Image (cartoon, rainbow, N blue to C red; front, side, top):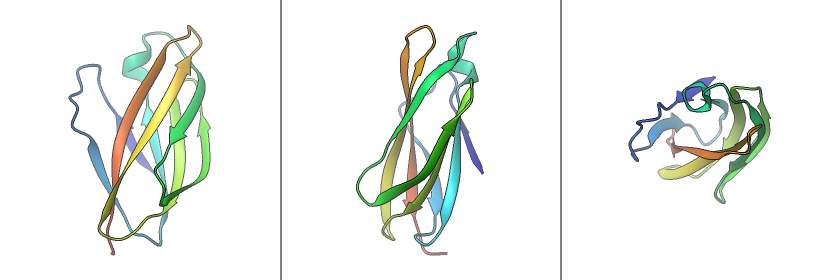
Length: 101
């Protein structure tokens, strides 16, 4: 599992993860630094065409997606959008770079 966590001072540069086009991998978004005592109520993932969401789940502080697919030599942005119990909506985005391994 690949973990991703971004502090509240995170810049707009995205963390990049490599994945083989034939792999199915999970990515966990850790929201603890952003929540400040709040909890995740709902979590959705926004994926571009070309990637497949195999499954997704969340806890009160993390959200996990399992991803497959992609075309070699391509990069895809995957965004996790959460809504908290207090009604806040927040996004975190990573880039998955598809490379033959």
